[in-house]
Image (tube, rainbow, N blue to C red; front, side, top):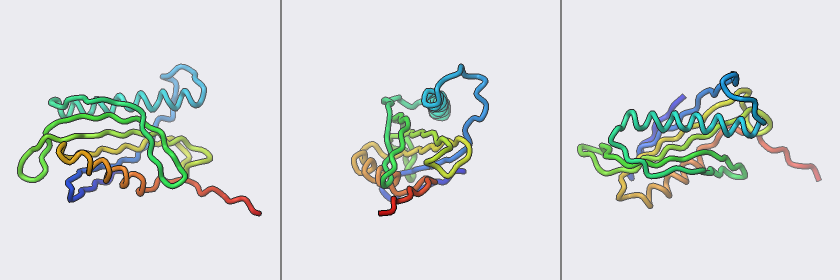
Length: 155
């Protein structure tokens, strides 16, 4: 499932949620946490390749770990940043494009029975970097993921 958002700032954002792999026969046997990290890193690499295939002129600016905080929940993922010209209105302008990729594991925390990836793509004019980063952080914090409510202990 994918949804697109456009902000008047301007920011062009897309959010995708889609199934992750179920068969691990292509990977060596790893502990559960190591398996999750290997799956996330492998998929992150493919997502970066999609960007450079669709935007061969893109300049890679960097990558690293990232965290989204939604209330009491923190989600760890990977982030890559690129620059290229993007058309906002009638003319292309120098822009920043950010890729965020997360792996949702089934279990205690999520309302999911299988692995899923969550991917964000956010693109904005480079001249509006500070404002766009602030708006993007707020957007990602407010768009809730399907998590199970924590039961409060009875007094």
